[in-house]
Length: 203
Image: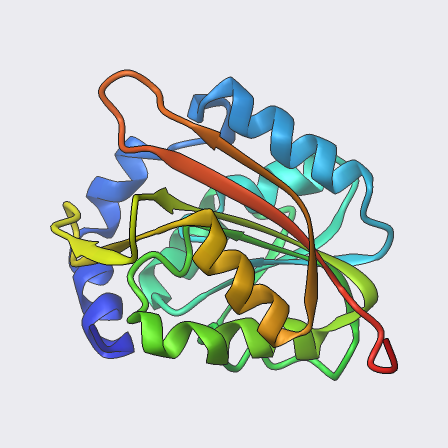
């Protein structure tokens, strides 16, 4: 699945997606608690990488974060700016976030790499590592499966990952995995989240 395919698929269904994800308050309470807890431990600027229509960017701003939302879908960025004008947003791809090396303290990647071909995931994680300062924190949300494999997501093909496989990719990219969690809500696909910290280059 190419970046252009994902951009086009979400661009066509942006308004429909907004109806499903109007605000962070409409997201599961456990997700909000996790993101809030993570945000409280980040000191410095934050990127919401793959911000969509901006609900989590606005949530992070409400938690006191100096946050910028970034998304590859121009329509999402337009919608985010209209709905949540107190935060800033721009168009960029996840493997080229457009900030200086080691310049941010935290990156939220909440289901933003679920459509990325597994062979391309290391490049995105490497970009996250480039952007984060030493000790910077990444919170990554994903669909959890028993193996890395595609499935027919409502918008376009997505991938299940095991926590072990994604954790290894993170370690390879220069992270130390600090916490993981899994959850299976009734009627929903299994969910997983990983908190990982950028290790110093000399460690």
